[in-house]
Length: 324
Image (cartoon, rainbow, N blue to C red; front, side, top):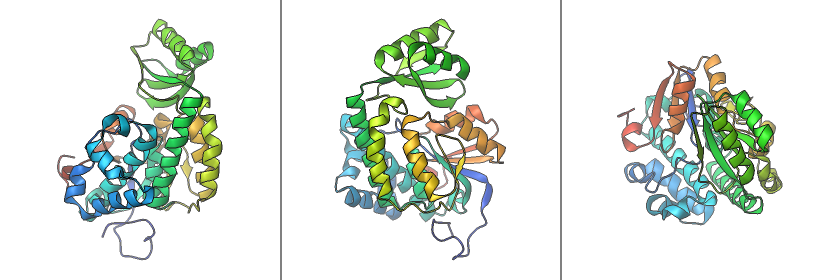
């Protein structure tokens, strides 16, 4: 029998897997059509999409399947859409009794908005509450991006210390430490363009400005913090049944109070993805399942923690145990 949040200690379950972690993707993994195959094949997945539409009082399912792409890419829509597809895939895998979800993993983690999927999977918050919160997060971040216009850029092939120096010189900020020489910076566009030029001069292998609606995980997102503070204050977070490795600190969250602090802090703090993966590695994690659309995180983890067995649950074939 597959483990599900809230059932620990009340059912006969497979023993916890101390070598396994689940991770959930963030913005950038979306594409029109995502989740349609699992919706059509799995009653459990279909129920998640229907619950999302009711919770949001909006046709999120249709947007995931049919677009239009420019509407799906709006932050207010992208964030709940990715959480919904991720949890639908998790529920479909449970329904199929996939070996990677039969037991409670040792840890869960998510990249940026993926942290909300991780919290739902860990039983810290219900799906309905989580998807409403992440839509509000997306709305507030989109509004903050309009109030404080900014951009982001990926810097490839430079050490963190050098990128920090570049940011100090330019006024940009480090936003994502993704690992394997991939660091994302953000800020006002003149500062980011200056940082890109400095990074090239310091020997960056590649510098790419990203197509985003704001400088996420930077101080320019501060206007979103107060709005999220109010939204989070209205939620009763449970202590997670699985430790959640936090974006802002790369340390495990084990209480509802710590979750509240993290969800506010991560809006303006860099996503510590490399350190999160390194933390998992030091805790004996040798198998990681990326649950959600795409396979971005598996690609990053492969370059950070060599030797870890990586699995993607991102389609009907993978949740049925094929093509992992």
